Length: 301
Image (cartoon, rainbow, N blue to C red; front, side, top):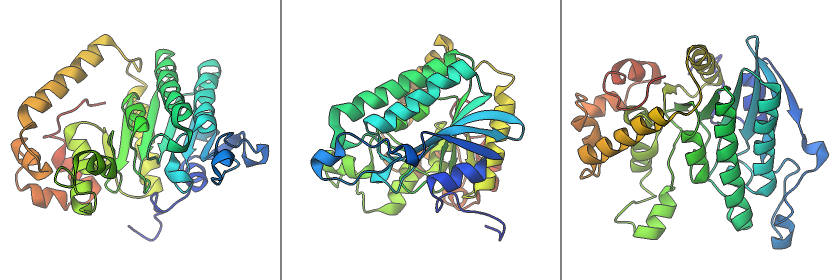
């Protein structure tokens, strides 16, 4: 990373959204003191923004709505108010019709402190994302924070038009610790960080087709990628179609058939026809994208 770069991974939610956009006006800022109604009952700490920043901004002449999760508060987990802010942003987008909605996700999923309220919130976010797409407004996810994007929000991410990840990012339904707790360390050793990133990290997700762009850990790289995705989506239908769902299902069935018996991501890469998978894994993001695009399995933009 050069001297003018700014790490996306190390930035806070507000730093990310303000650096990504040319201007940003926050809706429901901390001064409104909209905190979770549940955490105080558990003597758990609260945050005046409930761990998510939402608002309207400009991105190189385009009007965008943006939501940025604060991974430093409860791992970016979604509770009732957190989810309501996301849903409210989506509903406002349908009325005001910005050029796009950007979701800067940094989360372990549902906030277990809030149990059913958190689960309901995530389901409402999923519905809201699909409603925004049905209105013809693209929804783009950026993942590059230290918490990755897991749990119900991992599903939300895959409901959007495009996902941009850094190599440091992770994306999955169940987190490594959850898998280990449920099925034992033999199934997945959460302490094996190299295995965690090989399995859920940005490079593997790109090759599998679960994300559309891989960038360096640099806010400016995420910004340019978001602009590139917006330009491509401007000439495409952004609504989720039955044909797209059928293609996705076929891809998943083919993936299971081809790689279901393999347990090591590098074995999957080799089965895809990637020559020297270990060498490809060591490339920087731009070089990796150039080499890996010909082997990827997923939905292009």
